[in-house]
Length: 397
Image (tube, rainbow, N blue to C red; front, side, top):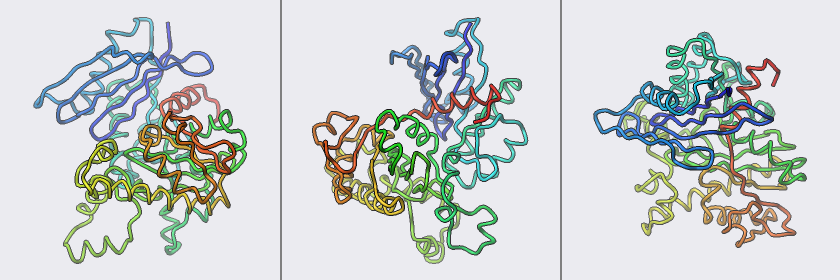
């Protein structure tokens, strides 16, 4: 008999999952996959721990799954594959926002679920869907423990001055401040840096989590000291469909001169901007890098420029830089983006090793480079599994 932990990451149109066997020092990933195309053309695909596809199914338009249907499809597949003696002991969830109240992983009950719904406006692309999965499972299996793991938790170490906006104090007291996100990814990277670069573990590191969502985190001695994502998950870098940092006056102009209300602006800055908006082609970096369209090139140039500029800002906040780490879908796989970002950071003393970069690293800076550059694959799911196990054990985090 094996104890299993299921990790879920519920998005607006997909449900990603990993099933872990909870044994030994580190949970072992048995299966991972996703149900994508929710509400449109749903597709289920799962691989085993060796990367072999062991389950696949498609639903035609008109029969598409919602989040509840996706969870039912996952559990139905599990009943046919998992051993009868195996038991699911808990489900761990990625929850983007925990606010000031929830700074550590926690066992969810109805009151906590209600509290977390208050943060839906701060992460409208993620939070409602994260919580929907919890709600569905509470209805389906009320006695199954569920643990919420927050993307904001890792950033509680950020100094107050780096959290603050220059607004009247009453708004700060209401919780309007920089929270930072992608914390589960940054937490994982911080856990493996000591084995990769011991000097960086004691020094000043910037981690670039580059994917459809993108951000940078400045770490001093593996503790977060600043993050480009702030009050919401739309600040900072240009992203797949999110604009990143925007002059607030632009939004006032859009309201006054273009007749846009808050919901229209929300749709614009979260879903219609970023790589998609600038290129007019796609939010997928792979598509843009392969395109000969000058608008695609412009979008890529702006993406790299914003990263380079923010690296400079965070290096200033750190008082220098010892290491730069790339992670996330773009950071781990887009060789040209890493090259251009490293070139932009050359003034800090980063010397790129082109051959190593093309080969995927892990070290992509030259020997003797004052700033070392690395490519490290992130594993947010493992962090959630570890946190879930810890919460179940009752041990403090």
